[in-house]
Length: 250
Image (cartoon, rainbow, N blue to C red; front, side, top):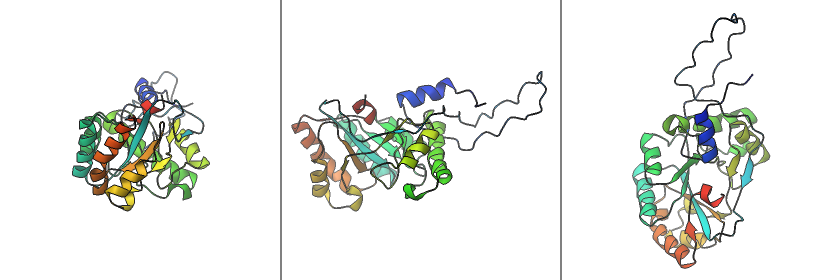
């Protein structure tokens, strides 16, 4: 029988408030305990198990028609640069979603995202070419980042996003669902900022976004920081408001 699901897990997974953590799965309960003997207390360091679910649903863009876009950032790279990006966005009134790589996550990284009013999600533990993984290693990549987010923030994050792929494969959707994520956030606009093509090229790529678009960007590239003021100006002139992915998809 599955472990009871904590109210804390359900609130975090449903509302998409922040981020995850604490690795390791709980071992099975002893099978020969007398019925009058209470089970041993759960470890205070073990994360709650996610509710069982089927394959996740892939979200690529919103269809509400509202004049909004989601700027989504792969969470990795030098923290001072990430801080500059996120603080600039906050000053300009833009709220975004950061899909964090687990190896990048720490108290400071999580705090700089959440304290600036942005949203956290799961982008695997080590950012491998995930589509080529077999089910168990794939699940472990998702689970380990999930547990880190829970440990740091009390939440698994609003979304999972596959690494090194614009769209999720059926296997990735299956393993994301198994890890407790009902939604996988893909994207329809790639800024290609990870190639470091220069601020003008990044700005031009993001200009392809339309109402409902989900844009892929990266925190760890100086050209992204340099392009952002122009990107935000372009969006404002077109009447498009940058919001978190959760708000876009609501």
